[in-house]
Length: 390
Ligand code: NZQ
Ligand code: ZN
Image (cartoon, rainbow, N blue to C red):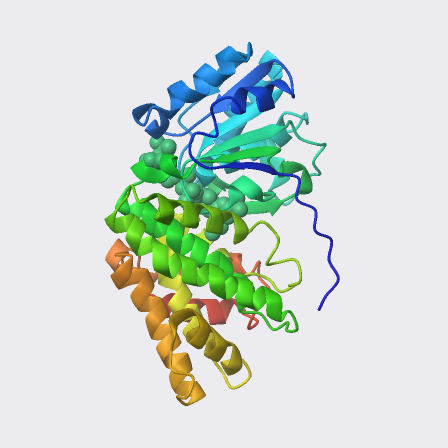
């Protein structure tokens, strides 16, 4: 077991109706001027915009807005938000949306505190943060866990780059998680979000570090939760139990609890971020295609034992079968869950992606060196995995 520090500063309000009477009070603690950020308009259709606005107004706060934050949020939106923060002396940012709106808002909060262009946080300059404005979030889609983590991923389409970075200053101060808000998420985004949650757990579970039985058991429980409830949420969008389980699992998959003991790099995410950077695809969809192939690629006599516990404890495969058979079945069941059960496309060719950029994407994914994850991956390994996804 490794040493670690567990320090999560995000206060969570979970459940139906928790926004009312609480959001305004929380915002008020940080100042008078609020920048409300959101995406392409789902919050207006669902009525959430009016609920949030009424909280801001009844708390006597002044509201400014940044709308139109894109899925795979662009650096241009970060720049637009930073400009408003500086011009209007914003005290607190309120992000209402999915991971894209939350991530974009995190970097707006950081960008508001510096004089340089926010892309410098990511470009080879990797500029230091100088603190960040406080961020409060209202989550509308269960997927990324951005509501309770310190990461944010930004896309620069002009350079085909999608870069993520983690910093303690980026944790939301408060997050509102009301599962009923996710009733309006359609089948595809529910499936893609569930694939994302599932993969966040896989990335941590499949590691070469052992000795934390408690965390492995916790992760198996989280994965079983996604397997049980994602299909329910797809069939019955207004099933509270399913939406609530997915929402809380999305937070715990990435809020540091399961990952604290682990030191190995994630593998599927860098491969997927290149797909999104080059083809602007939905993150969870990319992961659904990559995950079973990556599992297949990493299976060898040294890693086999991990597939056995995964197969038995997550998918209920008969433990008396030979280990190699359990591992094969575990990979098949993963693929079946992500494509047949969730209804997501199962290959790159199905979404119109060919091999033209495999080499350059592979080089970027491992930054010209190696992804030191479950199994170390160099550019030629990554090309092979992309080819398995064709
Ligand atoms: O923009 P609106 O109109 O709100 O519509 C969104 C968007 O079109 C829609 N949506 C969201 N909530 C809805 C809804 N539609 C109906 N009802 C609702 N309640 O869903 C679409 C996708 O939204 P988006 O925010 O892009 O999805 P997601 O939450 O999956 O976020 C994806 C982004 O997060 C990054 C991904 O790379 C991607 O850029 N990630 C962030 C992470 C983090 N911060 O830790 C980790 C993840 O691994 C991931 O990389
Ligand atoms: Zn993800």
